[in-house]
Amino acid sequence: MTIRRLKTYTGSQGYVYQYYFVGKRLAADSAANEYIFDITSDRKLTYAVSIFLPNEVVAAWAESHGRPLADSERYAAVKMRLFRAFDEVEDMQAYGRQLAIDSQSLEESLAALGVE
Image 1 (cartoon, helix red, strand yellow):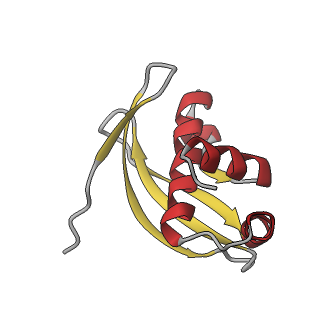
Image 2: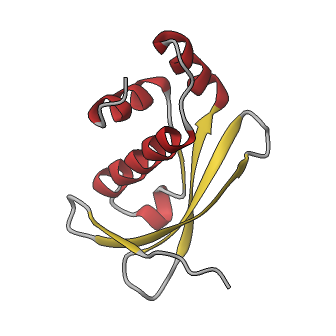
C-alpha cells in the first residue's frame, strides 16, 4: 500500500485545495511527459489533473541554458504550473483537468525558483 503525502494550497480565489502527486508517465503521443495529481477542494470529490511538459519545451530550455533540466527541476516547474492554475482557474474540475507548460511559463517558473 502506497502512503501519499496530502498537501494543501490556498488559491488566490479563496479555494483551499488538497492534492497529492500520483505519478509521471509518457503522454499518449510520446511528445510530452504527463504529471498526474489527484485534487480536491471540498474533501468529497477527488479528480485527476494532468500537467503536460512537452519534450520540445524541455529541449529548448536546455539549449538556451547550456544544460539539461534535472528531474527535480522539471517537477518543480510542473508544481508551479499547478499552483498557477489554482490561482487562475475558477473551476478546476471543469476547466483545469489538462494543463500544459509552454516555453515562456517554464522559463518564468524556473526563474522564480532561482533555477538558471
